[in-house]
Image 1 (cartoon, one colour):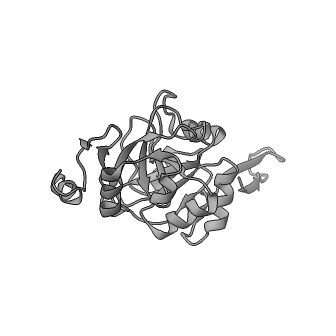
Image 2 (tube, helix red, strand yellow; image 1 turned 135 degrees about the horizontal axis):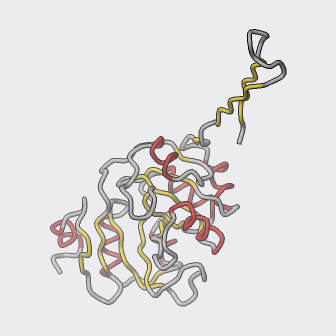
Amino acid sequence: MDTKRDVNTCGSSGALHGIKHVSVLKTTMKRFSPNETEAMAAILKRDGCLSVPTDTVYGVCARISEAGQQKLYEVKNRPLSKQFPIMCCDIEQAETVAEMDDAARQLMSALMPGPLTVILKKKADAPSALHGETLAVRLATSEPLRRLIQAVGTPIFLTSANQSGQKECQSLDEIEQACPKLDGMMEGSVSFGQASTIVNCSNGSIRILREGPITIEQIQKAIGGK
């Protein structure tokens, strides 16, 4: 990290000559414009971690790899037993790692991108860094996020920007203080300021696990009142 040093040498007025007082001012974490896609993608491809704004809360992300996942656990100070949700650029990319029936596809087509997380069964040939039998899937909620995921070439792990068990960060300054191990931050703001609605579609039925910006009525309408 770049630093700036201010060096003052004591004068002769009662101070010892040659004693230097050095103050070190640390620079702030790198903040990227949403249009700096390639620079941010390069960080993720090296298994680094970034914070990004979503439509719900600020998130922190890494590419889907064992090394990227490990770095994200360190950034969040998160127990290894807790899996990370993923974000895909579109439904087609989600289908490369997760199984979805007609009802899940209909729900996602109607309400995503949007503040919705869908629990899907993981495909047998999904990357080994995706642990467990199910995946919590979101679709990119902005054009900069969609471009970033496309540039990385794989879905990304994405979770809230905070230390595990603590309140979600509300600004880039808070993220920088809470997650100093990040490799950079995408500038931008969030829309809802509320965690996404979670719907389980992994077992042939649709069940709401957490209420959020997407309402029960919207979900029922999207799937034809089923």
